Length: 144
Image (cartoon, rainbow, N blue to C red):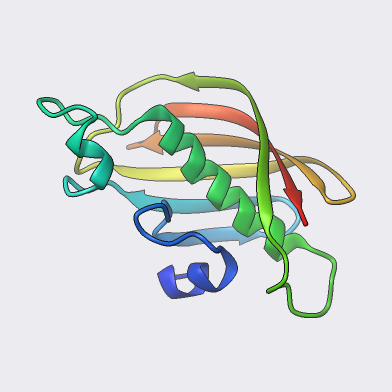
């Protein structure tokens, strides 16, 4: 388990763009499960949409990418500090959005490492609400 303070020590993101609240499971070099609690006061709900709040799909993918970034950092082979490293989101494939995510939902983000070649990572992510897949994507990232 990792709380928000531990996540902030790994990722450079900060509110309102830090989109994961806690990590509930990590298998270094393999997979991670993170949680994002979606609240009505999220800044993006002001305009998306004023009369029917729906979390933008690209932000669900960003939340998966942030969980993947934590996984990449924790899976690095290096022994020293990684504070000088950043994970950059490089690409996305096969993104699908299955159901809307609304205030009150708790997103469970599951990300697996598909392949790693040097500092390039290919990740597969799925987002769930109450065990239902709401979004999925293949993502590419680079640690620099």
